[in-house]
Image 1 (cartoon, one colour):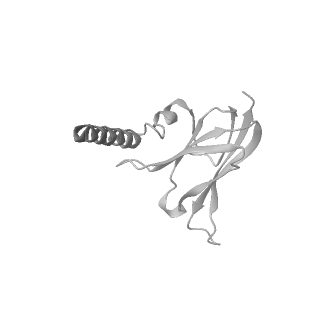
Image 2 (image 1 turned 90 degrees about the vertical axis):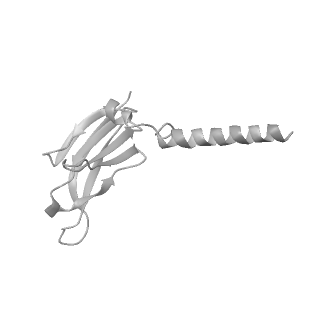
Image 3 (image 1 turned 120 degrees about the vertical axis):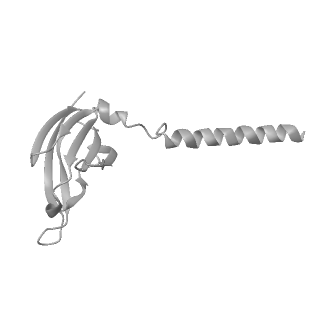
Amino acid sequence: MQTSNISKRQVIILLLSTFFLLGGCGFFSGSGSDFDTASQYDLDGVDSMRIEVEQGELFVLDIRQPDTGMGTIKGAVFDPVLLRLEKYVEDREPGEVPRVRYLFTPLAPCATSIIIKLHGNTSEGHPSVYKQIDVMVTAD
């Protein structure tokens, strides 16, 4: 009788270990491949951009961190009723310029904007606008 309890316990431990191992590998939370399959918009060298995407179509905003004197990216301002932020990643590869990547899903046909704000080095101490992306979402 005690032998079967040990077997059940081992099975439970094995299942929990597998769950946490797969969770750590991105199995449950999605993988980096979402960034690879989505439409890419590189915002280097532009202050504003207009993009057109279909409802439900994933898109990525790929942004270089500004020069040190300008401050750092504080975040993105957008309407969560119209756009869903799926992932946010800061890429800091050795020897590379740091980048920020935002993965969005448009939820409804609309015209909206995403404002990327900077923190630091502003006269009033408030975040300043770094990039503005005007998004036109069409029905799928």
